[in-house]
Amino acid sequence: MLDAFSRSVVTADASTSPVSDIASLKAFVASGNRRLDAVNAIASNASCMVSDAVAGMICENQGLIQAGGNCYPNRRMAACLRDAEIVLRYVTYALLAGDASVLDDRCLNGLKETYAALGVPATSTVRAVQIMKAQAAAHIKDQPSEALAGSKLRIMGSPVVDDRCASIVAEASSYFDRVISALS
Ligand code: PEB
Ligand code: PEB
Image (cartoon, rainbow, N blue to C red; front, side, top):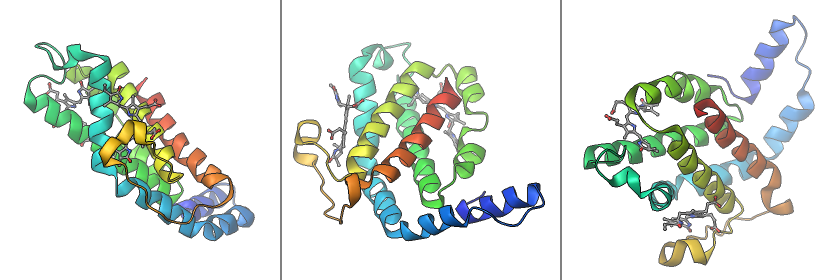
């Protein structure tokens, strides 16, 4: 498992050169509090996000909860909610570390094959991950909408800077995209 610092060391060592990307590490340090707020925005809302994403996936494809669907019976529904939470948790780890290796090695490695063997449908899984990607962007920007959250709306109130944290939103989105491409 690597983070932004160990990644830079490993990369430099592989080419027997001194560490060279000091500027990007400096930016990583400078944006540290923003990164922590972003991770907190997701982690603090994780259970709401997961249940909403899985509910949304099922709303759009109700066959999932009928006999023969992969979220039927309750045992599979529970496994699905658990899996969505696992994926979201590993995305927050990657976001905290500033590196995708923890997500790749401990979550995505072999997941596509596991799902194929279990008959878990990839398109539905991808849809749930896409909804979580949209949720994470909204929560990092601290702009979740009333329309989609209703009484569960949660505004963190942490300071939001330049372009509503566009670079952290983009980085978080890239980890969700990594999950989607690993499953597709
Ligand atoms: C991966 N998921 C399931 C299993 C495993 C994983 C190993 C089999 C064992 C079990 O049931 O517990 N576990 C999971 C993971 C890690 C891990 C990501 C990473 C560290 O250790 N079904 C759907 C949806 C989707 C879903 C599309 C989004 O219709 C998930 C949720 N995963 C799902 C289901 C099962 C499962 C297992 C329904 C149970 C399948 C079955 O037993 O028939
Ligand atoms: C599922 N939720 C969101 C999206 C969808 C759903 C389809 C849009 C995803 C996208 O843009 O691709 N929609 C929902 C659902 C059905 C449906 C269950 C069933 C009929 O059609 N906001 C908060 C809470 C947390 C939350 C803490 C409620 O303040 C969730 C749990 N859902 C949330 C957020 C978004 C979202 C999308 C933050 C992002 C979009 C937004 O807020 O505007």
